[in-house]
Length: 369
Ligand SMILES: Cc1ncc(COP(=O)(O)O)c(C=O)c1O
Image (tube, rainbow, N blue to C red; front, side):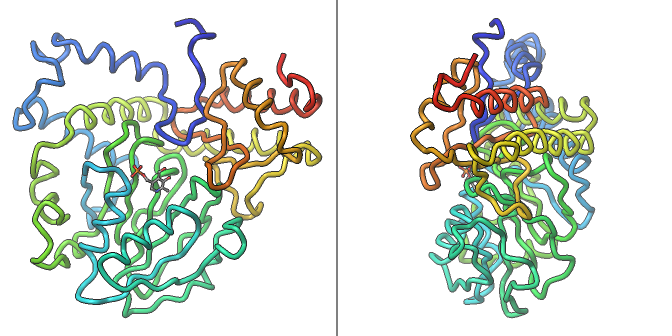
């Protein structure tokens, strides 16, 4: 494909993959790459696949600086599956689950937790339209809670929890789907940290769950084995047939991230991309209105409105003519959103910023070149 045909996706996920990884995936599917069988045909009990999967778990451990106290699980079903599994596994009896409401995804986490027991709102940003993440000193939680759940980055509202508390009376559970590995996260402060993979780690339909080992014993016998983290931990994420192709694809993505300089380089690029795009928006307050409270801005999901909402379709069409897609905001917020995760080159942010600049100078016109 030439540069014109290869579109640059700012979609919230599945998100943009680096060119090299797409090429490697295409080549790696061929039987010769895995000794006569396509990687798609490998038994999950084979040595070759076992090595692939163990390598992915080690890569995650290294890249995310996972302490020995925590287990790394690869589970099918994305992040939503964890909305259901976390309360089933961590709640003892009718313990309440405390939730910090920071956006639509945390509401969904709360709804899923409420299906199997009591839920308390520890703090809520809802009244303010989720423009800010409630400050940690305002969280109301107690030792009687099974855990406290927080979404570390809010994909839809475009906000981020900048300071993860060091200690809390109950284990901290975090949904880091839209910033894992793109942004620094103190994994050791979480009892459990999870992420759907399709934004920062590669393929959709797979979740990474990092869980403190002592929490694995909490699930009651009434929870079927397949739904217990403990089963998957004991089987090294081979409890049943795992999504082998997705795990392999994640390994390609993580290998590329390591080659690029690992977590530190990903964090640097994330800060750089966010700086470039927010600066372009802030330079034209008469045209653009970034939604998040400046103290809580997401570094991966830049959500903004046009002062003149009528210009949105023109904006999107002009961006698409320049090969940039996926900029439409989430249906619940409207407006526009640029999602930039690990697979987005810094040049992608530069291209977008240049476009924002041109559009701002001529918002009524075509906006593009
Ligand atoms: C923060 C957050 N949590 C959960 C989800 C749901 O993920 P999945 O569709 O993989 O279940 C998303 C998806 O966009 C998300 O952004």
